[in-house]
Length: 458
Image 1: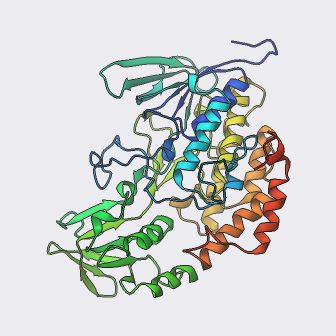
Image 2: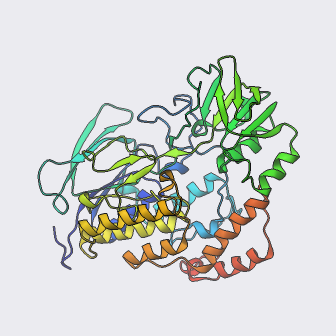
Image 3: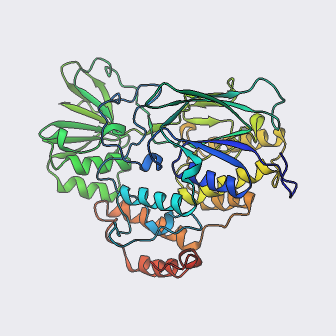
């Protein structure tokens, strides 16, 4: 179908109504496409829709299709200041009678997404309580432009199944749901409680227990600091004891029952946890804060797109699989960047490519670009599992150019870096105290067009 401007309009299925899916829906509609968003939960938010009831989930998240999508725990507060997080045309302002902190709790971010959804009238595009069970190519047409997709979905609470055909599918299912577990000798034989942080919600179940927490990333640190207040002893097992931040060291020195240990060597049936330095503890519970894997259990691309050691590929610019582009795309794969503005630039680019406003490079050029990217990561010593960790503002700006999206403002970049640096030294307090330099940046931010565009002064 071709619009009056000579651009084609497509019938698009978006999978997931989290931040990526919502902004995808908006950009598709803006570009003249017809879109439906399929969401397995009863409301929008994706990861930010808090689910306190985790009893039905496998504690290690070993099921192919998870019952619980969100990995958010009750006390979780965002790790970046609210000023940098908003979509480019919808600032994340503090509102009366809500959580007004610069680093608010998870509910406040969910309410921001609700506001975004309402402001842009997106709810009518979403089909809730609908789980996507299968996405595959329709067996006619040539690869690329004329490829169509079969999407099979099921009502979560009923038996009704629906099969539909779309011109394009955008996968926006997030990357913080499918637990990534280490391989530890004796793990299957260990008879006591083992959970992944995906199902951790509150500290109370661990009262008076000896708890081993595996992994000292953000969630490992957060959960350690919370559980140490109720547990008998907490042993934080880290990959490397050499790269512990000053902030974590300060926390450990404050708590007599919080101990830093090396990696686990093996687990034993009698409850013993043996570490690489030969030391042992008898534990009641092990909590694996070991991150998440990319998983698309519904997606059948005949082996074209795969996940290998947490690398989703081949994807041109983390977005388009060359031989299936532009009819299949992904939003929200990259990590370690300012998420919402980046997802927005992805959504704009995809919507514009689908309408014909923008063109992708040739298949050969896209594959060459991917090969060169992989090679550059290898030469930099970056493991395959970190392929999608960006941590580079220049890349975000270069990516934005594909759709003529705005570059990240300087204040946004500086506030982001400042929070990271502050967390390294002040792990317990960085969300509530910062230096004068941040206050100056904050004034720049609040007086910038990003915050004044809607006529709402924070």
